[in-house]
Length: 265
Ligand SMILES: O=C(O)CCC(=O)C(=O)O
Image 1: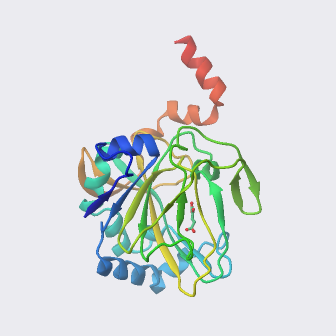
Image 2: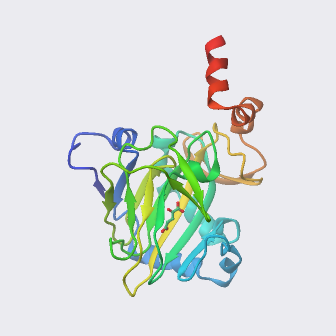
């Protein structure tokens, strides 16, 4: 496994880079064989029920919540190699809030600039592990990110089925990736993918992890916890620490109301 830290920051740790850029790239995290097996599982009959009818259009196919229906995928998202990698970024206890595989076929269009928090409306952030199941190039609709865009929620507007960033991103970076490379980015990092102008399919698999201290109002139990006290441990649970009354209240309050409460303390 080989680390791809931006060239301007050779001495930074991965965590420092993540804090500064909002993402890190790791080359060769998985083998091509592991990726081929995962695509087989994503395309297996039991995964067909996961086809997302809302975002799937033409040659662009979204499969969501695969881990809930496929035991091999459940093992994949909770494997020690991933959990041990994520621990320094997320902390000792975390769970899987969502997963999705995206097949971007020939002719599939742009997926516009956005932060994932604009789609789900959460106050707290989660961590996106983007796994390149095929190579990603500018031509086949690979991933663009905006370094340093992850510090706050930015303005978006709903256009058809998309939440679209209302602004001109500064210094976007294209993430070149080969099969088995991974990108870890914040749910606040601005990203987009451009059209696939090739004859092949660009596959990506995204797993979204969240600290058990944070609250996700959008997902119903059971919750797949994958790390407990820093150790890989896969277990479906009915609740987690972050679903406490304070976090629930914070979710309902505006940012202004929260800062007013903090000022009173
Ligand atoms: O896979 C793609 O082309 C875009 C998906 C994406 O950006 C997302 O789901 O947040």
